[in-house]
Image (cartoon, rainbow, N blue to C red):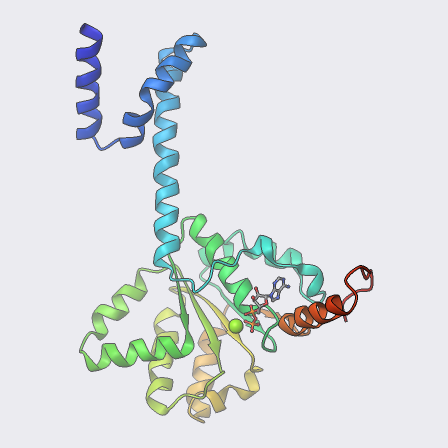
Length: 266
Ligand code: ADP
Ligand code: MG
C-alpha cells in the first residue's frame, strides 16, 4: 500500500519536474537495479542518463527539422570513390564541425550533379547532431525572403532570426543571375554573417565569374567575395557529374544485366 502511494507521489513529482523519460522508465530501471544489486547512486545515474539522452535526441530532431533541408542526404551515403578528386579526409574533418566553431566558411565548387548539395546537406545534418543551429536556403530562396522581409518591413526580425544560427547553407549561388536588388540583399547577408555565422556555399561558377551573378556589379561582388573568402575552405569537386554517371551505369546495366564491371567509372 505504502509502495503504491510512493509511486503515485513520485509520478506526480516527475510530472511537475517535467522529466517524462524518468517517469516512463523508472519502473523498469527499478527492476533492473534490484536484480543486479545496483547502488542507489547507480540507479539514479542510470535514470538521469536516460532523461538526458532522450532530451538530446529530441533537441537534435528539432534542429534537423528547423534546418529545412530539402532532402535528407547523409555523408555516410556519399560514394567517395565516385569523386576521386575530392579529399575525403578533409570532408570527414569538416564533419566534426570545428570550422563552425571558428566561424569559417566553406565553398563547394563544381559542375552540376557532382554532389555539392549532397555534401552541404550531409555536413549540415552532422552539424545539427553536434548541437549547431543550421538553416538551408537556396540563393534564390534567400534573396526572395530578403525581398519579402524588406517589403513587409520585417527586416530587423528576419536578420535577427538569421543571427541565431550557427551555420547557413546557401545552395546554388550563381545558377540564376540576380537583379540589382537581390544582389544588394545578398551582399547585406554576407556582410551580416561575416565572422558571425559560418556559411556553406555551393556554386557551379568559378569566383572570376561571380560578377555576372551579382547584377554585373564588380565592386559589390569583390566586397562580397572578400567577406566570404576571408576564412574559407574551398572544396573544388571537379569530378564528373554523378547524375550522368549513374544514368550511364543504369543504361550499361540494362544492356548487360549479368556481367558486373570491375572497371572504374569514367
Ligand atoms: P550538385 O548539387 O553538385 O548539382 P547533387 O548533390 O544534387 O549535385 O547530386 C545529384 C544527385 O546525385 C543527388 O541525388 C546526390 O545524392 C547524388 N550524388 C552525387 N554525387 C554522389 C556521390 N559521390 N555519392 C552518392 N550520391 C551522389
Ligand atoms: Mg545542387
